[in-house]
Every structure is written in C-alpha cells, then in structure tokens.
Length: 246
Image (tube, rainbow, N blue to C red):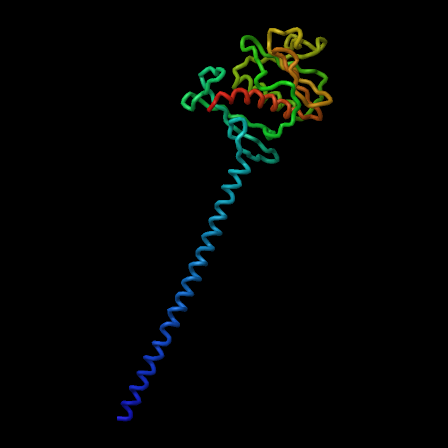
C-alpha cells in the first residue's frame, strides 16, 4: 500500500515537472524561431544588397541621359567610351514638329572618348546656328602646320564617319595653305569656297569652335585636345537634331 502511494507521488511529481517545463520549452522554441527568422532576414538583406548595388551603380553611374540621348559608359582597356544610339528617320524635321517613336527607322551607334556632358570647349555658335550645304561637297581643310598629336587620326576619322554615315554628307579632304595644295588635296578656305560647307582644322593657343561665315567653321585645338573639339562639334549637331524627337 505504501509502495503504491509512493509510486503515485513519483508520477505526480513527473507530471508536475512536465507541466512546469512545458511553458519553458514553448518560450525557448519561440525565441529560437525568432532568431532563425532574423538570421534569414539578415541573409536575404545581404543578398539583396549584393544584387542591387551593381544594378544601381550601373544605372546611376554608368548610364545617363544627355540632349535626349541615352548614354552608356564602357571601359575597354584604359579607354573609357561613352556610347549612344542616334535615331534615324525618313521624316524631315521641321520647326515646331515632333518626330514620334513610330517614325524611327533605324539607330546609328556612336562612341565618344570624352564625357559629352563636360566637354568644356569655347564656341561662338549654337546648335541652331550650325548650317550645312547638303548639295555639293563638304571640305575638311587641314592646316599642314598644325600640331601633330597621337589622336589626330582618330578624331578626324570619327568626325568624317559621323558626317558621312549619319548626316549623309559628302566629305573631301583639303588643305588651308595654297603652297601645300596638290591635285589630291585642293586649297580650300572659308573665303574661296563660300558655296560649300568648310570645316577648317588647326591648332592654336585655345581649344575652340568658331563660325567664320555662313557655312564655314574653324575647329582649333590646343594641347592636343583634338578629340575634345571634334566631339564637341558633333554634340552641337546632335543637340539641334535631337530636339525634334519626343
């Protein structure tokens, strides 16, 4: 009888102990679940930041919009390029008109070597004042005594390609000194070819773009800033062109 009573007391003690432990186990499990949730949340946050940072960096640092064109920065070797695609249309732009997206027939890709937003080149002409005679030849007239720089070839080829391939202008090389002229490179200046568009290239004490007469422009570079002056000229042309697009 005493043995049975003792057994019952032990059972009651075990059950009482379990009842006391149950709330403790629930609190511990709840705490553990909270810690696991926080750990998962932290991991998800870290992963999200790791994914978002390159995307945001590329979006806000490597991409920008300027003169209604979307630019992308790309580094190839030690050279940074600023690339964009210019819309091509068969619709003739007119004052006050807007060219719709549906009127764009193609895109012309172009790569700049300088950030177009910060081309600090002095100029006495605006984009609205740039005029080209489409009928006939546009002359690139080089000063044979201009400073010889590593980027001279790149700058001239890129500008000529832009005018020929994008603007559909017939380009021909010339020289601005009569004694240096040949049958291949004629003597051309603003004064002796007023019926043509003339782009004179030379070096001087200041990098600048000047409108000398109705269809003649003088591009002068200093300290080998030849790509800066030619690309600024391209940007001026594009600025006027892109105003017609929505």
